[in-house]
Length: 406
Ligand SMILES: [Zn+2]
Image (cartoon, rainbow, N blue to C red; front, side, top):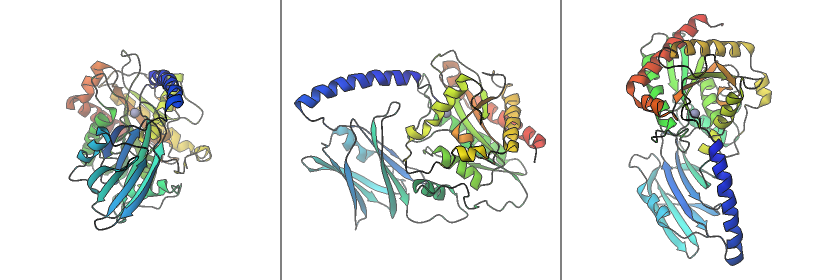
């Protein structure tokens, strides 16, 4: 999670300046649309193209065949070097995009041509400015071919989410659990368009938490009677609800979301563990953290067609056992982590994190260390510390399994 307080202030200042500029420009000439950044995020599930501009883009889209192309015409836009640069961003192994081309189709219409490798279903939507981002047009490319049932349930869940059909009763896609193994889902926070917190030396939270999560997964894989899955194993953005839905769909026995903390004071340091609170946060810091954390959806880009099924009604159904098991899991992990890093808070904290809201899966959120603290940022990057954290989390999980109420 990140400290967005300063960001917000900077944003307000920027907003005031922008408003002044805008009032000047309205007198003389219409505001020019300018492309300020373009990004391509390939992943095995879907590929995302993000076009970031100073004002919202107006566009229309259509398909052309032989070869298959998705064409997006953007009004009132002159092709600049930023947009032209998009052609260099496609990776050879992108599952969906063969090539990107841009051109000035008409005097005031820029054209983006996406040449495709396979049949796709596009999901195109706009996002309003948030955090450091300006207006964004997001083009998500999903495969037309359905994944086989025994494969990762992620694609199906994302599709349902986009259609507003992500419900509380997802189909059981659980792989056959022959040995009654404990199912553990590890959730590396953030990803893709959402970097999470960024350290003084530019370390991104999304990268270190993925590395730690992979180490924990590899340790769990060696254990008998444990099955392990990850919500993401790539640099991909996933909505918070989809992370939770994936854990539920795999019938997880426990869910562990891995993060790195940030605060405006560089001295802040230490590890903490959070569990869901239905009655409000245990401290104002916890409430603030939950608020910034839950913003990940808007930063990463969620089309608002998504059905936010984890609303208060469902929250009210959270079973007492789940919460008390979450507390037990949180305490077990905290008791181990304290041996590898000083604790930020000596007790587990309670907060209303969206990612902890699976009604029937004991869930915790681990803030491994403060990425905003230069010392801890440095440690977070080392394989030694990453292994220590992963080992501590595994010990905590094992202790929990012995003590949990079933
Ligand atoms: Zn985070």
